[in-house]
Image (cartoon, rainbow, N blue to C red; front, side, top):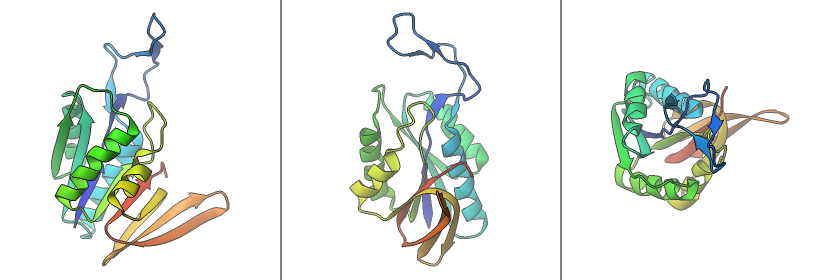
Length: 179
């Protein structure tokens, strides 16, 4: 089974961001960039599943400028087997990213797509849900534990009252939380 993991290049979470002088956005010139922390958790979980024998290949994918290659190299260093860069200079909103990922899901046919629940730059928390709707796949959000058994995935997620366990058939979409 293939696992597809989208990763986003964001301003490093340790960097104090500055607003541009004209007030139009964040000044990212000469600022350290890194992989979105939630996406790093997703890559780590995909690699764990591969090490357990539940997956055969982990594919990292990023959409954006050519510098996203650095983020993909980080994913490869963590343990991804392959990386795909959808290069564009356009500023992508969550729906556009979900559409690009839906096309990749159709082409690569992964058994599981694991995304970070949100990016720390826009806090949108939409891409995973939109991808599930566009691809017509079951989804589990805010996962703290993912286990694959045969043609099913069991996801443990934190809710207000404690823990909830969801069981879904594969292929499926899972978004990871910090736990």
